[in-house]
Length: 134
Image (cartoon, rainbow, N blue to C red; front, top):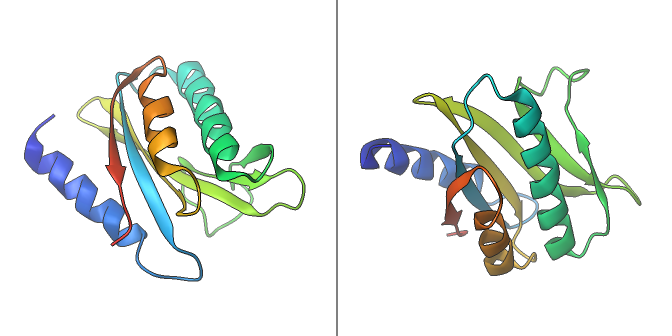
């Protein structure tokens, strides 16, 4: 993947983290998954959910696909806490140059370094680009 494309995606991800009600950080998960590998993409998203929820101290989280919500686009998901449906993470799955890049963002109170390290150890993950808040 070219550095220009990576730089563009990084800048777009930073824009998603702009100050709002909560401070956010993020990670871009570059995968080797093609658009034909739906089951593997689902399994990877579930594994990432477990990592972020475990390092965000919010307990277990479930994945909301937003299919019934016009505010969501396709390939956009949220992790919500099982206990009270509180925000844990949100992601967008982007098909870029034949493989998926997953853009996740979550509260800055989570253990960002541990999340990035754990994400990098997952199957189908080629690399992880941490995106700190600015």
